[in-house]
Length: 302
Picture 1 (cartoon, rainbow, N blue to C red):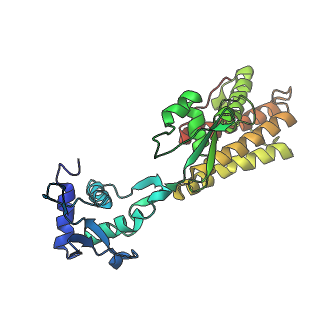
Picture 2: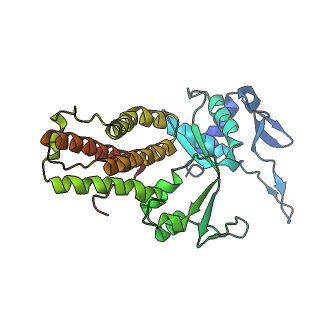
Picture 3: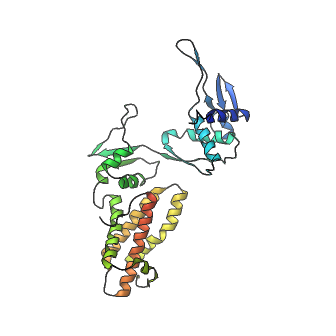
């Protein structure tokens, strides 16, 4: 561990040697205000006297091992780190970054990145599942997966901004209808696979067909949605925004369902049929790619 390996003690000594600490009221303080924090922070608490009169050495405050950990991570070659924490830990950001700057090991400002999440409410059977830190009652990811599925848990939890309140509706997550967003997207993929299977041809040959017949409003709306995917994905990665991927997939699934309802795919005109097959095959590929990014399966049958 960071303590038994001596990394925490070594980090503190490094900060002392750098002249970034001072002692006051028996405690060791870090000069975090030099790096943008609103006040200096205690690194090591003052000694206390036990009930039997012995002196007990003060312990390190909880941000100190965070500093030691990230120095170790940086030295192992991780030029980027993303911490996912609860919003109740937002106060640690400035002090951890200050400690990393004060250590003088070449870590840039703004390292590490942080994504802060609010609490998630869980509703089951129309009633909220009570969660209490004090009472020790909570819902685990294992619980959610057992109640629903791994696909539903991933898609649902990634479908909102991390800093906004969210209610995980267990009953909705197991529904097999269009109200369930993960089912809606997966069904679009399975629906396309069913059409391609009914056609029976080689999907690889569709990459070279003439797309000229795709001149209807429904087809063009679907193509425009497909064209958004690369830029959407790049922006989602840059902004730490996987919810943008879930929103996009729902919009793409809606565009496909509208297209499917508007136009027959397996028509007699060979040129039109192949063009439409190429369009839906591309849609299936993008749906598969987007779901894979989220760690969600893309079933071929439902």
